[in-house]
Image (cartoon, rainbow, N blue to C red; front, side):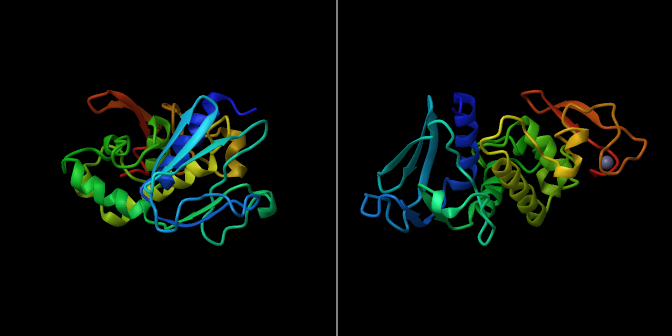
Length: 230
Ligand SMILES: [Zn+2]
């Protein structure tokens, strides 16, 4: 049975990609006549209560789900092949892909220009669900220096950072261990830089080693490769 921790991480991942999005389709294949949110309504919240997961919509309806013994949520981009047969789906929600663009707008509007990107990525007002591990992993994946001020980062790179975060969160939905590297690299560790200070960078493999340093007012640990993240 999915444990409470798994439900909370599922809620975090769903929140990061659903909140603020407009619903384009909401299907309950096994309950064709059931009540459902109307097309055009917006997802306003995703939360976990014990082993229950709740999705709230702007028209006042709340989807209440329980994953029972083996249920799970899967996230897919348009056109992507589903890992399990669509005939097994109990609920299908299609949304517009606007979350990345709105995250960039929120970042520009909410944080000072000298805020370091590693601090901004953790700001849950901008995009929910990005925790301290993903912050370091996302910056490494996009070859961005986590200590760079947001004023030096273009909108295109910001979009790449939030899109990468969304993909990592979606990939890890419902799993126990976080994986941020490709399948063929997992044998060497599931993450690229997090908690790997003093070890060689897994991408550039130059003699300069991964570093770890505390960042921001909350002094959260940040890991990065000074060679390929400039
Ligand atoms: Zn490197």
